[in-house]
Length: 590
Image: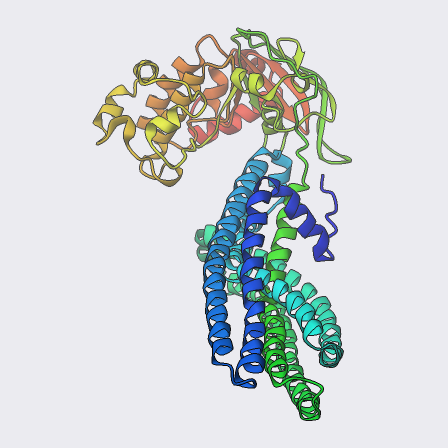
């Protein structure tokens, strides 16, 4: 379920960003103080120049000139040190904030339910963690200090110009009003454009990932041109979005520079006449011209980094929309731990389930799996057998009825105790980048090498581990790419065995292996499943034959249940399925 963020404006996003970084507020205040000190030292510089001109040069007082010069140099030194401190502290603050944001976002993503990931494109999610965060990194590294000091300078210079000569300040402020009006128009147009850019880059990455991941299929069906065309259309949208931002920048920046030139000419015209009339000192005019340049320069600086600000705000908006996605699978406020040791009885009480409302996938499923029983679930593709496995693992909650372990509804259990009691062995053993030890301990982080060794011996992979160049410290590489499919599956079995669950859900762990490797995995599997409740998603005949009981699913309903031999003898739909399997395997269905 997703709630609206309301990111049509940047203020809600900025306020929310500030709440996320509350723990960094004192560092932020320190950075702001350093930037303010640097700005103040800079603003006082022209006043020292004015004193040197009016009280020194005009009055012929060399001492006043020397004093003004020393004060000016001292202010420069203070400005340098404060600016350096501000530069470092703002950069540190920004990087710490991004570190916090990335960690918080990843932690939130991995907590979301399977329904969210089935609806979301992986490329878009990767874009949130990479491209969007990168746009904020650019602002932190290049624009944050400029943004802070420019804002402080604009307001500081405005106040000092009024103090030096309010008449000239009124002339400048009148021109600035025109700039502010143009800035408002630019902001509204650019905000939409930058949001479009962030949306477009997500679609580009999603299309790119899809094309690369499915390149074998693309080439097998000679659809390179069609795939390139699909990517080209998404890429064209990204180009158009960037061009809209370029058009906004192309008219806005030159306009601000033009108004700056007009302001300088106006101050020289009116200020110079007042100096000649004796209404304004020459030192004040020089100081005012300093301030005038400094007044427009920060505005130009802000214009130049506005794209970074807007890009960062737009990216934050996308990230916060992910934060607003609430997991549908959560521990209840009164969730309890499952009593240990768990017996492993699994019960489906009149369970119904739909991925999409009004489209039932399971209907009125009543099923009890006894502790230690090995149950095979069979059926044609799309019958609902994998959905049953997902409900046992609580990847989803049933829309009707309940799923229980040892008589306790899964929805009332803590996720930790449920995970200890129920483990998954997927069809393809997935390994994470790291060492073999890390992957074996994944489901039981507290296990030591002695316990790992004992499991390896029971599974029969101790000799294989010893043959590896670094033993348990061997790097498995991304997705376990260093090992074969069979070796990865053996590691997955050992990982599940080390976790010591009461219930194992198995998605045909030997279906993609060669006969020799399959035999090794089958031997290891017999050790893992011994004395444990096993729910097997069966795609092949031998899995069903080795089960204590077989349940056949068709269109979300149980249509046959019993031992393999009994169901074959009954000459019903199960026998028909077995005959199909037998023709494929070349065996007698019995």
